Picture 1 (cartoon, one colour):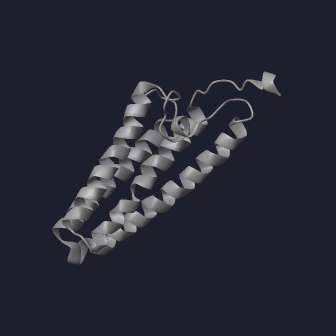
Picture 2: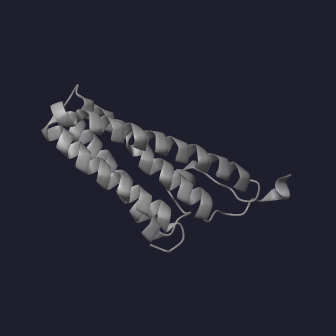
Length: 143
C-alpha cells in the first residue's frame, strides 16, 4: 500500500474478511446463521452505496479540473498505482467469488443476500480513486 488512502483499502479488506467468514458459516448452517449473513450483507451494501455516491460527488467536483472516466473512477484504470489497484480489485474479486459461490450452493436461502456485497468493494474503490486518483488535466482549449 502507498500510505495514501490506506484506511479505505483496509476497510475494503475488512468488509471482505467479515463477509467471507459469515457467508461461509451461513452456507454451512443457513438455518441458524442466515440472519447474521443478511445483516452483514445489507450493511456492506448500504455502506458501499454511500461510498459510491460520495465518490461520484467528489468526482463531479474534481471534473472541473481533470478528466475522469468511469473506468478510472471505479476500477482505478490509469488513475491508481498498481499496488492500490491490486488491493482494491482483489478485494472486489474475492467478494464476487464468495458471493456467487455461496449463493449458488444455497439457492433460495438468505445466503443469496451476499450478491449485494460487491457494491462495498466497488464503492470503496471509487472513493479511493475519487479522492486520491491521478487523472489527466482537462483540456479547456476547445471552449
